[in-house]
Image 1 (spheres, helix red, strand yellow):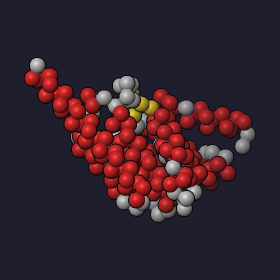
Image 2 (cartoon, helix red, strand yellow):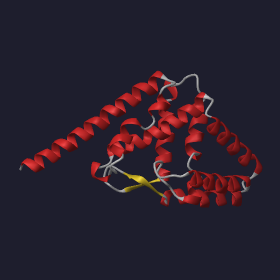
Image 3 (cartoon, one colour):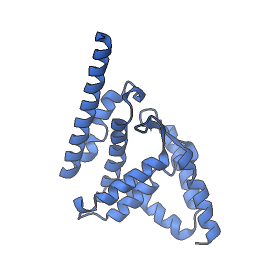
Image 4 (cartoon, helix red, strand yellow):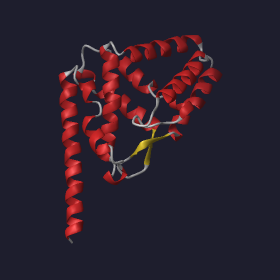
Length: 196
């Protein structure tokens, strides 16, 4: 790959630093897509020993590229994204990937095909981490930033992605405990305010 080709890729992907997600950080600042992608990539790296049967380097690559389509469409929360939104994002991403240097384009296309098929352990791990990170971030964000549907969504989102592996099931259970604790604490605080 030539240096100018590399820089063109960097200039496009930089957009994710300014692409805001629905969730906020623990201090209430809107989170970027790049921050979300960074943290699921970190999750994959840290979990290498929990999944000795999987190629965790490939999982990390999936985590790094999974939201690149949002460079072109922005982030639309899962509960608002339509089929038309998904098709537009997929088309724009495919056009961009086709424009990449051939060796990079082929590698990225292969990863996306594997992610879409959801048949390999690597694809299943990536998808679980993607969903889990959103729940973890919501548990860390101020509950005042939660939409009403997120009280339920945070309890169930990604549960089906945990079913194929006992460690992921244990993690999802611990995340649910944190969600329930956060909701209970906020309700206790509301009760204290009403009683004062």
